[in-house]
Amino acid sequence: MNFAVETVASISPAAIVGLIVAIAVLILLVLKTKVHALLALIIAASIAALAAGMTPEVAVASITKGFGSTLATIGLVVGFGVMMGRILEVSGAAEKLAITMIRWLGRRREEWALSVAGYIISIPIFVDSAFVILTPLVKALATSTGRSKLTLGIAMGGGMVLTHHAVPPTPGPLGAAGIYGVSIGDMILYGILLTLPALVTVTLYARFAGPRIEAMAPAGVSAASGGTGTILPVVEKKTTAKEAFQEFNELADERLKELPSLFLSLLPVLGPIILIFLNTGISAVAGATDGVIPDMVVQIASFVGNPVIAVGIGVIFAIYGLARQMDRNTVLAEMEKGVESAGIILLVTGGGGALGAVLRDSGVGDAIGQWVSTLPLPSILIPFLIASMVRLVQGSGTVAIITSASLSAPILAQIPDVNMILAAQAACLGAMVFSYFNDSLFWVVNRMLGITDVKRQILTWSIPTTVAWATTLVTILIADAIL
Image (cartoon, rainbow, N blue to C red; front, side):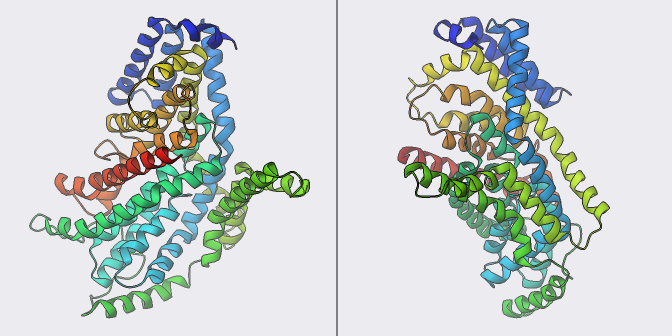
């Protein structure tokens, strides 16, 4: 399609106005109407295309091309990822990991154990589900050890929300990788490196603020209320922290008899990541020095390390490692439940790809990119700030990521010396800002932790997500200055 080539040099003012109108309509439809985000993205893409002078036929072709190419990049990975996550969820693998981390890090460091456990568990499992699954463990641990339940809950949720926004195969960062056209292996590596500092700051916030938020509970409201039961039996609080932790370990011993091994619990998650990284490393070495690695090894690594194949292998690990005790029909039914939850996310991601394709094909993205490159601010802030604004307006982190990536990728592609992997991560991490009433996770966290008054709800979840957001902003700016 040569439309972009013909128009980039002389983009009309109507195209720029059309883009502004398209973005305003997108926000209005998502925020104020019953129109779904998918349809809103397609409407916005149509307005931008027609305003830029595309014929209806060319506009539709651009929209469908962008939709299809984005799903071709990430569709199977998302599908396999949610299948794997569902098996991890129902098999008890997530619970196994959380209990193991608590034991490894030991007494008086339970909040660090839960934040790290949440950080890992939220990679394959949707964050809402992961938090619901492990909240009973938080309650049991708080009751038996005397630690603040809010400290433990905030730390665990903070760890979860970081990888949910930054590390594939979570749909948001997968979508950003597809729209920006960057390697999923690189997205995983950058996502981990960029969020580790935020894991520290959000856990420190939980440790400092948790007891103080509990102390603010209105008269007659128990700080330990909420939740849906306990994984471990609730025990009478011991006289010392050491005795309490010993009691927790005794109860955990009984529960662990019903859970899978740590190796089998981690294998579906770490196996695909290792395969992807091996492919990246072997390809880099083979490309730098001809003949140093046999071609057969390079080809095998390229195949099994492709994200689609690697995550598919992870699903097989989960089926035959974690679901051995389930019958065939149960396993298939659980995986299909996971796929059902991913369907709308895939469609929204494809809609974002359609909007991005229109901006590229119309030449509007080129024109804006040339203008933005003259502004006195780091280019990497463009996707970060767009994601932050969209998140504040409409609440969904995934929609904010996809919208930001769709708008910013065509712009940044025209600016020299922009690290596109870092830019894709900026679109992801900007969407963490100030989770509040229009975000479903805000209600999940506060409801499960028993927080009912608005002030404590904001302190329990809105502030820590903003702490994580601010930390990643600093990290991204430092990384951009270095890279």
